Image (tube, rainbow, N blue to C red; front, top):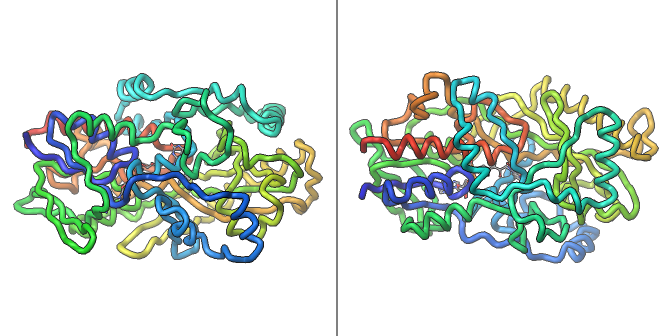
Length: 433
Ligand SMILES: Cc1cc2nc3c(=O)[nH]c(=O)nc-3n(C[C@H](O)[C@H](O)[C@H](O)COP(=O)(O)OP(=O)(O)OC[C@H]3O[C@@H](n4cnc5c(N)ncnc54)[C@H](O)[C@@H]3O)c2cc1C
């Protein structure tokens, strides 16, 4: 059987592995290791916080090796997952179909989304278990005619205990993540190599012949008839550029800013992450306890149980780039204007909730701008709507992750990335290598 090498085991990579095993002998190369949820006692860490021990978000990696934190030139914090399951293991489990831009290019993924809805348990049943704070926030958003709706979540939420640790990895296995697709691929005979960082694709005679990777101190060559890159919106462009294939400086990241206040006894830190969403023009709003800001941002000075927050997630302009060691991504003036509008809307939500927000937004404070939905550096165009193959790539090299998205979704992208990955797998399965 012909050999396919897939780089990365997150949303895109695990989907392709599952779909292609059997058509090809699949080997998944993953830079990280087995995923383990964050196991530390958050109450103890909250006590340690007072000693001033936590001063840089990158320290998270020491306590939680499956989470990688980087900073842009402009000091924006970027978060992604490293290890089996990629960033899906630290996701909030949200499943929202967001393919308007792809449809505009002529890429209709109806069949792929239908398949995903059959394969993954997706539910809004968590609504029945919302705490008082979430129900009240939901009511306020309705009263403001913001049309909030419960976010569909991937997993078995009837077993959720509302521990509030979704983005730290679900210790109870409630939340679905892409390791489930990976296991299916393994059961069908695929191979997964962890601790294997792919550096570049080897190109000869206009074709990809395999990849060069670093495993510990060793440099290893994996031969392949087909190579699929799914190392994520920050990982894939670096591999392409190392291989001599240029990307476009069109990086988006979906920046997140939390607006928070003190509300004694609210216990939002023990509520499911992002229980509902409000879709606005160019951003979304959702209730959110921001762990990263809580530990590393001095504005977060109240106890976790007394802190109430709303997240703003922005659909940012595609103006950024990554090279080997440097991520260049800034907020544009238009990004900042939308953020400022969003902060005003949050202030009104808190006002109606009962917070005595003054005209200069007294009693509110802001979190650290951070982001975790990178992509866009090799965007698909109308020309590629049928082939799903970017014209700058050799015929047997494909990309199957957020790198292909034409612009920011400003929304959870996992479902859309997986639908794209399914279509790409179908094209590859028919391919003539
Ligand atoms: C805190 C947080 C919460 C989120 N919540 C949600 C949510 O609820 N719903 C949603 O839809 N989205 C959510 N997202 C975003 C979502 O998880 C990602 O956008 C999605 O997983 C991206 O899929 P991907 O396949 O492109 O990359 P990833 O899932 O990031 O997978 C890439 C994989 O490639 C590996 N890799 C990278 N470089 C190399 C290399 N050189 N060699 C080998 N392997 C490599 C990485 O280790 C990783 O495992 C969240 C993100 C964050 C940070």
